[in-house]
Image (tube, rainbow, N blue to C red; front, top):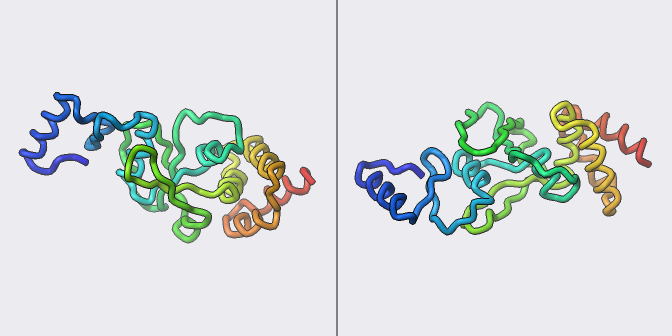
Length: 178
């Protein structure tokens, strides 16, 4: 985090010069030995503690799609200020009433931090709900892969029912795939 006092700021500057710290974003510094691969996750959870991996990034994390996202999709509470970010982060705002639905915490490798991650079922329902952003084909492909792995529609339906605009397109897709 950003140093608050002048003394801490000077100490941080010296550590940066010696190579003990790396600046990953404005006000966020990490030990130099931490892997660069998870810096966007670290920045997201540092800026917004409720940060949750969602949409394309969550589908890719669960290996339901072949795409490799160029940025990480992060959900935060609707109404929260979207932070200024130096990383490749796409911020999305989700309603508070269903924000925790299908949400778990995972460790960010190499740190003692955790970040939220939506379950495969929630991610599929979100992909159908926000198919204008994710693309209908992405949602359909994720659903096909989830079903191929043994997913049961009865497990998916409570997520589709709880999320506005997800139920009808998801039921239509299930009918076509059956």
